Length: 239
Image (cartoon, rainbow, N blue to C red; front, side, top):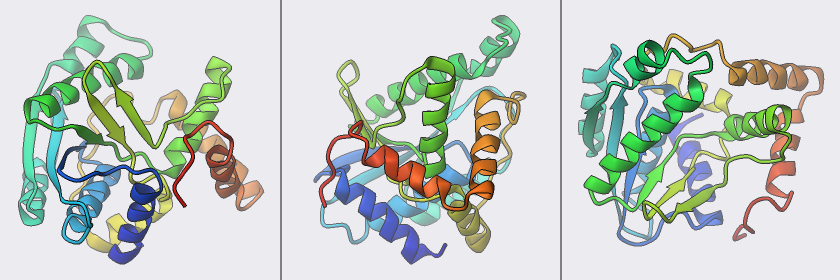
């Protein structure tokens, strides 16, 4: 995927679901992975020509583990003209040493979300952009059905009254394989995930399941995404 295609898909999501309004201050959650860095490129580029003016800040939540390439991520933000903030926490210690969670992802996600929200509010942001792509949306649907007995997945836009923040997902029309292609084409400074649970989660199991379904019946992922978008669980899009 090239830069123009990235902008096109991202703008489609933003326009279809009214994700950005004039004078928004958007916090981009940066994990150091390929998805969040692709999102950073997309929004930083769109900011130059999108009809509504908006401001960006990049926020990385340090779990208290060693994050590689952080200096390169800082340099990338400088090149893109986006202020970068690193928030140090003890989340890793709480989850793996103090609580010794057998299923650590839920607590870790909750604590990371809280730290990100707090920093975003401190900076005066009114929106947070997450880098969830179409594969994430499909996998979350399967996780919800298999382990909770519900048909649910991420919404394109979610407003939270308690924080007065909205979460937007501008990469929703882009697949993980396209993001991998973008990462390779533009040599993104991806940081290795330091989490000891990485690759050993329910989500990883579902990711492999969906991949196999798509191999057995090519086009399944596209049809699953269409079923979600047209299944009356999201607000009506603006076509």
